[in-house]
Length: 182
Length: 186
Image 1: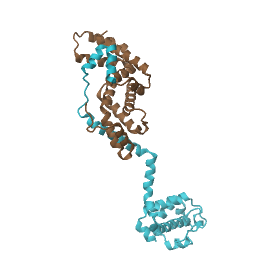
Image 2: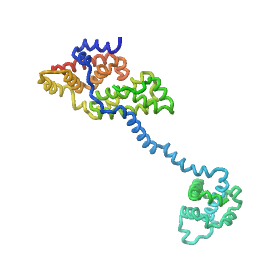
Image 3: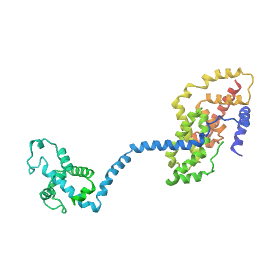
């Protein structure tokens, strides 16, 4: 016996009136026209909108932002640019070494320069590296740019700082400029 | 009642939902297949179309996010029905509609109003039936709707509500008696 028949029997026993109403068929209220045609699209639209908001705020999304920032750096780390990059990094490091305020061997600085912060000096060097005599910088760095830089040069300069300056330098330097450094 | 253009089985829908590539297509089929039954179930519980639409959309969004948790221990429709029911109950609780209307408070007033009418035709009987449902306590209304309109077995109702079949039978019987009494104006 089908469930429908069970229900009819049960209702006839409990309330013939309700069984009769059901038997006659109920006129359901109406849903707006085309409501069911558009509902799946409405739901999917809401899901996409809500997922879009979540994606913007999620930690995964923030990692993605960092990834996109590093993509050009990874591109530059390819073999053809790696040597130029190493040279540029060495030049920046040498510049920092020579002009670092705490460095006892640093070039005597004018009073105006002494008042500059490390960040300001670093920014100046990286943005104006073309103003410096590359030959002198290379000479000051000891080994040639194609050799490993003297580790002593990096004393007092943290890895994070170097990475930050390198990153900034790469952002501001075109590929042509990097190739010119080779 | 409108049905999807292409009839598709529960198994086919679940298969599509299993594959990331076909997930959205499967979800669309799921909505097309069950939206009307769920809509009328929800609408009977919450009343108007706007509220039913809100509840049903929330229900489908929940389904979209948790369909991977569906363990296939029950029918897909039973699982969907449970989510829709819970959404409707949450909605009703939030609006505190039931707190504002209890069968004790309003039944007498409405019944007296209806007693004044000399003749009751089929349409009016239906109207009274729907009015009586509005005044039932939430659980009884839910049970009445599931049994009377959606024609679920007590076992299916038990799967959805987590209540024993015996308690559900008792609840339905009470609801039927109350609705009949209201319609008769007793």
